[in-house]
Image (cartoon, rainbow, N blue to C red):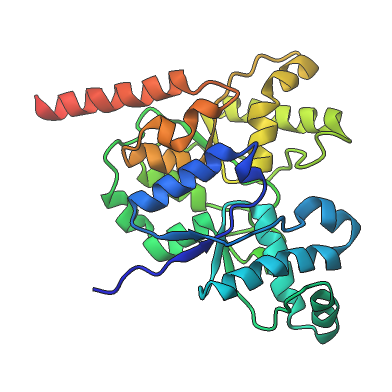
Length: 303
């Protein structure tokens, strides 16, 4: 039997700090599914938002260094949980096809990158390589009590020619994933609206207003949790939720899950393995709802 090939796993900076729970859930879910991750040796910041805002060439070089590290590991592709990191890695790949940009990028590197290393998101690899049908077979705790509002944000599918995943204006990858996990998925008209992304410091009032609008619409469509796949989106909707309430005189108490945390719960993994104890907005009531509905269903099946 052929061994599952290892993916080079590029966690990115956020996943070692404010989004530690995302990293925990990614590693736990991939391990449970038998998908091997090998963390990129001596990885470094990809540049992403701060470098991109000043110099796209510098950002490409920072990202290219990490792709070179993947090559040195003998692996053929990189996976990352962060849409912003993915955009940076793919920008580096795009520079390779333009001789002038490639030369300028490699001029900044100790070891030049001459051949491309494909990169994908964690969710894309789960859907394309593992597949929803196979994932459905692994569900042991259907998320019957979860009314999950999938929020994709700006960067997960856009720019479309760079990200090349899902429909950029009406994505459904998380919708379909959550449905096979047993969750109820309401129609959500704000699924690709901006939450403010990385502008929480220079334009905090704007971020608090935009994020308030997303949480309000999530409640309006009947959701009891928002599900994301981006650390910036999670930070704005979860970590800043008390600030949102103060700024908008609202009373949001909406848990925000990463898609890998939802998958992990359905696989029967413990909340601590998924970092669910690290959220600013408590998920305890939501977990009680999910486990309670699962217990009722099990009791009904046994009677």
